[in-house]
Length: 129
Image (cartoon, rainbow, N blue to C red; front, top):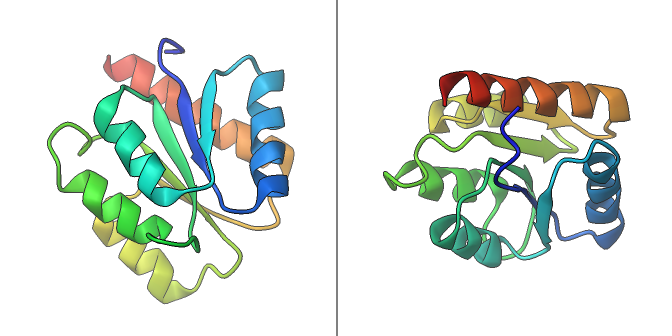
């Protein structure tokens, strides 16, 4: 698994962000966390990250908007992107796939399903590297 670069976590709910951090820390997966989607964008543009895990509904930029911006830039166009939402409507799923997202997860998250999905994306990325 490629663990040279951290996973970027972004969610505006501190309790949820702490939960994701704990999940990754227990697996010894390095992470960077921010509640601010604009800061998440700046991090992605200024330093390498392994993948992005973003909540859908956040101030400034939604998870879908963040994904679209990342996909539009060559430096971040292939960055694996996981979005988490409480309301995974068919329209949101379609928009997410069309924007180039890798994995859409529904809240409430189950720890094992979350970690299995993250490990799969990390392993897929390591196989390509």
